[in-house]
Length: 362
View 1 (cartoon, rainbow, N blue to C red):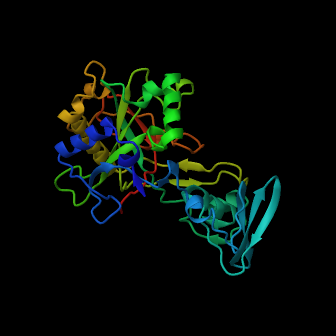
View 2: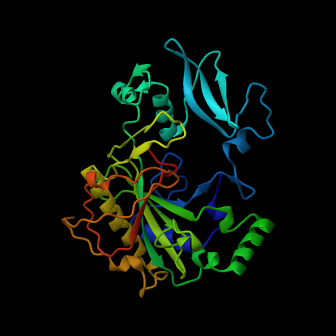
View 3: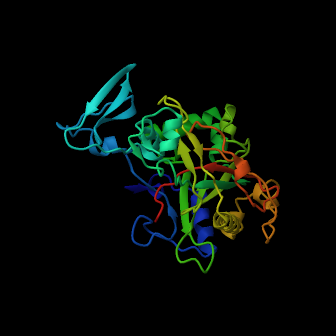
């Protein structure tokens, strides 16, 4: 375990940490420890400038005689002997294969693929499965329900100093220098995420524990899904992102067909719960408060700082629909008509994207 402070200390993160403390957020030495509340540089599972994945940390260089890993494989359905799951069918290299269990099966395919695999195997809501012509193995209406995701929003600012990724990504020479520094030292921005520091904070004095995560990102842009130029602004810029740690809104996802290659239909139902809407508004206010502290104000360009034009109604009566996207998931657009978004934001330059954050306290 290392820290961004060790491999890429930088003035933008230092300013953010200092501004958080000025805004009343304490400093924490270890947000994965007993006292996680506070602001700090991000911790990294990195060694020698390279990510230490599960495979690198536990498998490489440690031969396991009782372990066989099938890569580039897609699980398509569970296999049964009566009511007992005995194996899994999967596709690999254009062929259908089977892996059988001598004792037990563990389904651990994540929050998207696990319910998809169960429904494809006949485990789920009986009526839904019968509609698709899938024989019902077990009627469990809860499969695919209670989907929880963290909707991240961000405020972007133009920076007064050329210390962000924007100017690097628009300059081939600076890109080359960034890459050379990484190859020679395994340090710098290429050895870390673009988000480098975070604060786990309470939005109000009545909160019993931290309810939001606020973080500093070294880039800005109107749409990171744009192709050319990565959607980044032409000027130096950064963003202050935030999301709720424990959203109450619940969505659902279900298969659309019997084809395991078809993506499931995902209805995240972001901000359906009124408390979630209020927490996000409070997180927005706190994020702006941090950016207005003297430590960060010197880095915000007054003539084009996007957050400076935000106007918020205390009654939260205005309504708008942020540009929300599900990062890394190909699926149908969410049906926003069923989701009342009571955002009191006008001309704020905020964009929203769904993101599952790491180190989220329970």
